[in-house]
Length: 583
Ligand code: ATP
Ligand code: MG
Image (cartoon, rainbow, N blue to C red; front, side):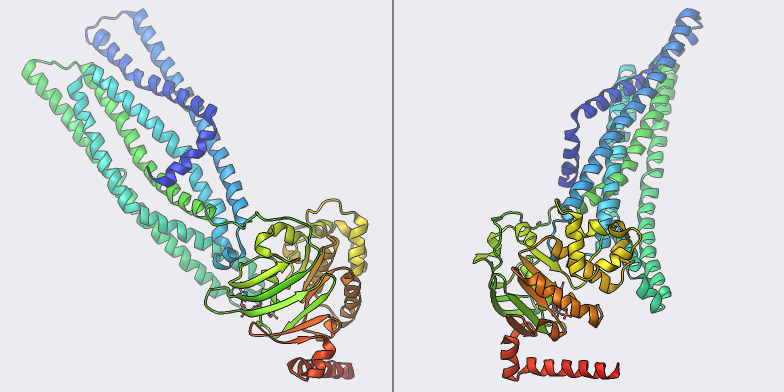
């Protein structure tokens, strides 16, 4: 069996009770359905044809037939309920698992995959898998059982006629095989295009302000229409395959078998004077009709099966992605951070960091400065363990990062990212971010330190103000300050600030520098800053250029050196002086 299908089926083994219940209902319902024509055959051949009108027996037969119909309807209803229940449970679990995997994927995965494709896997693909349980498995089993029941009943009536009808089965089998061959590639293409559609949608929604500001509505609409068209064409291709193979071809076979049955009946009737009873013929025609339905259903389900299989492949591929390791020692960190000759590249080709070394003792402050794209934020990402390094070593308290538990390291670090993320929820929730045992007073203290308390007090709902998606109801500077406060609330051993003051006005920045001097006390601090005035009192300053440290030392030392740093600083203070003069 196909390994993906096997893996998907393994899930339903967790619901044995429902499975058994569904199976029993299915058997009962099928038995009742198959027995119906037998009763009618009995009625025609034993009572109607010989004009033997024994009313009580006929009434009993009619009641029995009716009873069987009711039984089969109830049975099918109950089994479909059970199968649906299993399907819902499986899909729910699958979704949880996929999401749990997704949030533990290493940063590199998100660099290489679009978020829309992830969304597609968690929603559309799991949905397709649900159909596997609701329709495919339930129907396939049901129809198979029905088919066996019909064949047995036919054999009981007349083995030769049964063999004629059974010729349908290999013929339909051949159609199924052909269908499988033709449709898998098309289905795979369709699902991947669906994922593209999701990706584009997601990107456009996120970039809406840019699209509208740059008047790019038409171009984006066209690009979307293009993928949509491709998806439509792929669907059409698969519909064509379905259209020709699934119904008409099988109907043709049905007609041929029907002709065969009638020919045999006529031949027998002419040569031997009616060896086959009319009731038997009726039963066979009725059975043939019932037999063709499950066969068509089963081939129809192949399409769903294919969808589920491809969806399963995609979901499992995600699930099998290597997650971030959760192993490693989880001791409290004292705050020493060192890089020793660290080399790194995002894509394995373009070097981004080359031989970067530094050592920050507990409680000291390191500042990283340098041009845009010189690798400052990358150093932070490596420190956080977002990417594995290509060479050298990162150590915390003399222990290599690779031997430490990532979550323990991250818990000891308060990180203010360059582009902070605000979650949907209240302001307080955004500050606490799930860390328990943090009192409101601590939140206010942090807000106070980052100069945001006055703003929050002015809000009608204060700490309970609801934040919109991505913090849209805050200004860029407020988002940065909020993220700064969020880092302080955890009382981290190590504080990392990536351009934490880039978007605030000069007055707030000054106040923040003072806050930072207070926050630094007793903490290891690593700060990235373009405005050099904010980091002049750092214990060590590294000047980066194209991933290499080109100058290092204290502010005084670097100024005395008269190198690039001194130049940069001069330039900035002149700018500031001009600004002041203008104002
Ligand atoms: P800035 O001052 O503008 O924030 P930076 O010094 O923080 O710049 P980094 O973000 O570290 O710069 O980027 C260093 C280099 O790595 C850049 O050339 C950038 O193109 C590349 N880079 C950054 N992030 C990624 C990523 N996720 N995937 C691939 N390349 C990346
Ligand atoms: Mg950066």
